[in-house]
Image: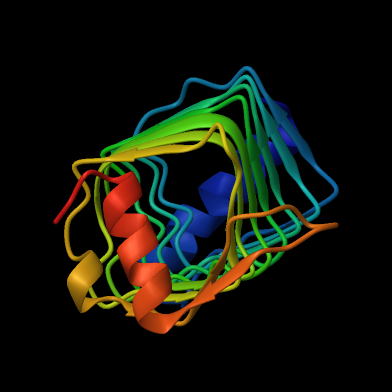
Length: 200
């Protein structure tokens, strides 16, 4: 990491540990985070705008209640991390593996997931509005209480071993394309997801 990034993260930790009395809340804009392997970074309640994480091992990082606007995660591994109550508007995850990660109560509006695996993770009570799944493999993910609306599944996306889908609020999905959408709503959308996941 560059010295400026290290300084901002150190000041942010001081801000968290002192409950805002010392240090300064982290704010990053148009920053490239590349080839990082730091463990246990606490970036909770920080702000990231139009930043890119490329070839980064995000291992036990805490993004609780963090603002992550128009962020790109590319060619990275996200492991055992926390995005609870985070705002991830217009984020893009590509060529990445997400494992043992918690997105509960996060706002995942207008996100694209492309060419990645999402495994052993939680989307409990998350807002999943206008999501695009392209060549995504979803396995052992908990959708309990999630709001699913206008979610696109391409033909290469797979779903298995999911839980909580019967307790999710499934409003609508798109099983066509962006140019030629095929919308399913409510119970029909729920049945399609369960059939694709091999659930009864």
